[in-house]
Length: 248
Image (cartoon, rainbow, N blue to C red):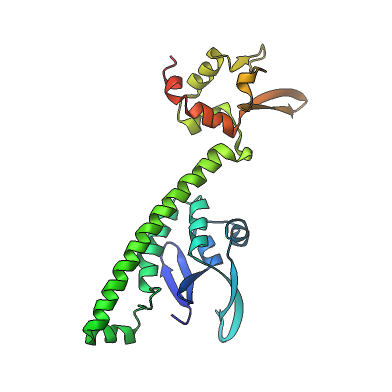
């Protein structure tokens, strides 16, 4: 495929794709917009590693060229993995089950000329079938790799990124345990204590190192402190989830 192809989907809009040296390049802004990023340009900067600029036909004037941002398949996966859109999985299926099979890396892009060649040449038909089978197996391998990336991304978001320290209610929800049982477990196991004013604060001991952090607040002249569970703490209490559920 030597020219740009535009693939349209009623749910995700249009995705512009070009082939270069046997590899696919996707219009980065098209992909990011389809995956629900509010700022596609920022999403590309944060998540994509191999961005390239290529001249493409101007959408309003075909005799003019504009510089556009394109990304390879690896960056396409990264945008899918980090998308918060529930339909990201459907977008992945559309791209890898419909778009990519239409434009093969091995040159089996089904133009009218290619269709005629396949219809009139048994050798061309056999080669096409062989290439399609190889591409299908490659897509299965990429799907498995993508599943691993999604798992790693979820683990990072929940347990490693320090920005994701959360209060006790949110932490209980993330661990899928009742909030009251979670707090009761923390109190009974002497991870935290309840102050006279009703606040729940962690004990200052070695056992709690890295599990909690305490933030101060000031609201309409009233000051106080509240407890957050750190990513390290979430990982620790996730391992104790069955014990938490046994608390009456």
